[in-house]
Structures are given as C-alpha cells and as structure tokens.
Amino acid sequence: MFRLVNSRYFIKIVHVKRIVVNACAMLGGYILIAVACLLPQDYIVGFFISLVAAVVHGLTACFGESTILGYLKGFPAELIVGWSSGTGFAGVVGAGLVVLLLYFQFELFTVFFFHGFIGNYRSISWRSRWWRATSSASFISTDRRRNLPARRTP
Image (cartoon, rainbow, N blue to C red):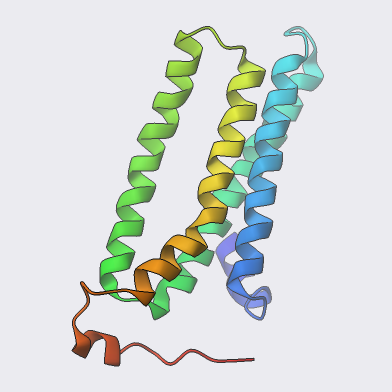
C-alpha cells in the first residue's frame, strides 16, 4: 500500500529528500522505542508508544526500500547487488548489536537510542559512498558505462 502511495504521490520529490525524510522518521521510531523503555513496565502508555514506533519502523522500511530501488535504477547492476547484500547483512548485524549491548548490561533506552543513530548514519552516508563508487567505477566496463541512462538536470 505504501509503495503505491510512494510511486503515485511522491514521484516528483527528489530521491535525496525522500531518503532524508525517511532517515528522520526512522530515527523518530527509535526515539519512541527508547522513550517507551524509560516508562515503568506497568504503565500501559509505554506499550502503545512501542506499537506506534513499530508502525513507524514498518513504514520507513517499506518507504526506504522502494525509494532506494527507484534511485538505483540508473546505476549498474553490480552496485544493486552490493546494496541488496548489505541490507541483508545489516539485519544480522543490527540484531547482533542489540544482543551484544544487552549482554554488556546497557539499559534498553541506551541500546535503542544508540541503535537509532547508528542506523541513520548508514542511511545518510550512502550518498557519498555511491558517488565515489560511480565516479571512479573502474570495475565497470566502458561498454557498460556508455549504456547508463542519461541523468536529467533541473
């Protein structure tokens, strides 16, 4: 459903702006989870805050994936394979990081707050990595470079 909204209503918004908005919403979801962890366990509001945070995380995951895939349509297939492998590995590393921090007896608030900023660093720093990878793409053949779609300038 959200992919349909993304492709129909947000199509005229530049990918970079969509990614920044998605990263901020993702950070907001992590902050909501962290706040829910600070509340007493018998306080029912914390449960509802965590439900809202889970919905925010689900929406940002869907919106972010469709936005990045739409952005990558102009790049060679070699870069898309690296992105898809990285997203799968990020799930394993993210879960492992939470388990590791809980093993060292960090509070839940600290774990989720820290996790939110690490995840958003990854989300925002992608642009410089992609730019460097495509500007000095020596691993891509020259025939492949010529077949890249032309970029539109505003």
